[in-house]
Image (cartoon, rainbow, N blue to C red; front, side, top):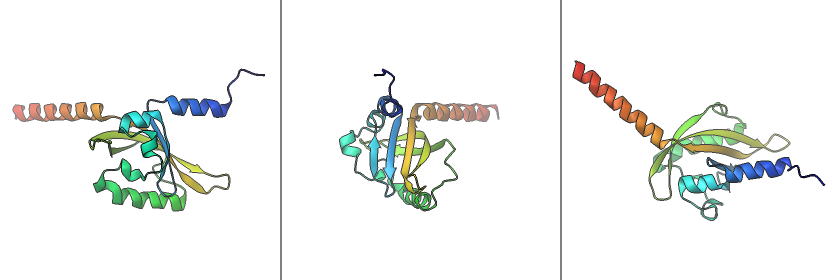
Amino acid sequence: MSDTPTEEWLIASIVAASSDAIMFSDREGIIRLWNSGAEKMFGFSSEEALGQSLDLIIPENLRGRHWDGYGRVMESGSSRYSTDLLSAPALRKDGTRISTEFSMVMVKDDAGHMLGVAAIIRDVTARWQREKELKERIKALEAAKS
């Protein structure tokens, strides 16, 4: 008997313990995986999030554009953004918006058919706010020099 953990166990342990939000949504945009990092970031427990639409965390004014793109990805099986670090606002359970950066993973079955999309998401609200404040200070300094 080996004490070496299986690859499946390692992956499940990493996903479960990650402080980044890791989630998976199926072809219809229904949340099927929601780790503890997602619980902390968005404020929804796994029980609350699993089985719900991604609308749970997408600001209402961005939903139309999101679903148009999501549908194209499900149809084509690819995204021109699949290797990029993406940025988008997201909603917390309490209704506040946060700034996020995330990467997407197209999840396909053995035949190459799309099963859905996984995302690894980080809350960058504090950094974004600092950058905004710095830009405002620079603008004020430049205006004072004029």
